[in-house]
Length: 97
Length: 174
Image (cartoon, rainbow over all chains, first blue to last red; front, side, top):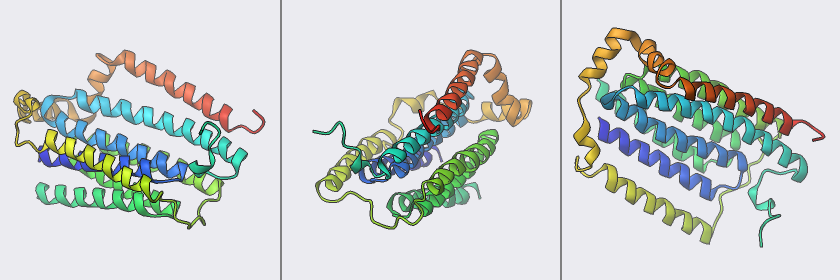
């Protein structure tokens, strides 16, 4: 069951990467980053079944950091929305050349 | 039984993840993400990580996803049905990057036990004994408050900074 879990985790990570690259909505890009974090968490949990408790503690910390990241990231998106009236990343072109 | 449940949860997780990336309505996307997170919690239970499964449901599917939904509704994006997938060269480039990453990961994980990490396995018996001795919460709590106590305190400070930062950023008139 371990190899299959690692494959599922790899598939979820690739889907998340693809979503970050291909979507324009900044909130959905954030969701895809959360999906990547969860894919990593799945392989930590699957390996911790065989290698000891440390993997699960790592997942605990990843979840905490993800919560902090979501709070700050969504606050940034709200303040960008106030300025541009949209969350599409195509409109955020101040630093583009 | 566990094998069947594993494949069911994996199929739901991967299917909803793909639906999440391809739906153009942000609210539908978010609800598919909740389905992914819930089935990942099921997978955690199958790997005997009961505490993390509960935290996954309460914190991820409960708190973080509700925060996302709240922001989507606050910004009134629920009616936004236009396609927001990038097209053309960018989509092809994304396919190439994702395919290359899938190839690398498949080579790492699918290599029929050739990877060196498989040699370190001591089997699941040690974990079963630990869980039977301390219980699902005690087994994770004991190292968390002894070996990892510095990281635990630092994460508390990180959360405080995040709360203050989020309030300061989202406040009108910065």
